[in-house]
Image 1 (cartoon, rainbow, N blue to C red):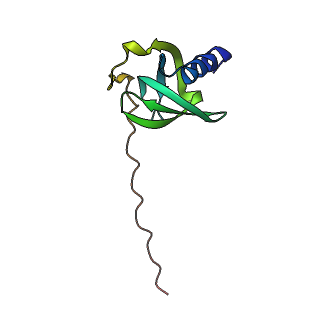
Image 2 (image 1 turned 60 degrees about the vertical axis):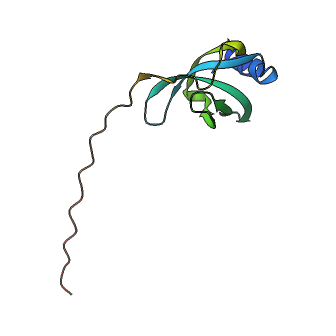
Image 3 (image 1 turned 120 degrees about the vertical axis):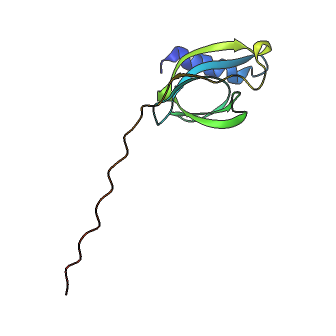
Amino acid sequence: MGSSEYTILKQAMVCPDDYAVRLRYRSKSGELTERVVSPIKMTDSRSLLALCLCRENPRRFELDRCSHLELVPAHEVLMPMEMRVLEAAPVRSPKPKKAPAEQVPA
């Protein structure tokens, strides 16, 4: 994430009545969604605490999974915002179950 993205987040945090942020977020499972959030604070150099206006709950976002950040005028935001799935999580094949170990008589 570059300095322009941090500038966008900072502006939305400083002026929460004026701006929200639209972003793309890749979940741990690989699903890519587009969301609108209201940033609250940076929890550390890698995480953002924000009110997800799609889920209507505070969420922690890993910054390295965020992309395509843009400021959205607050007057365009109504909760709940639609969360668009841009790319579904990859389907993982189930792991084969291990056969129970045979017990050796003592």
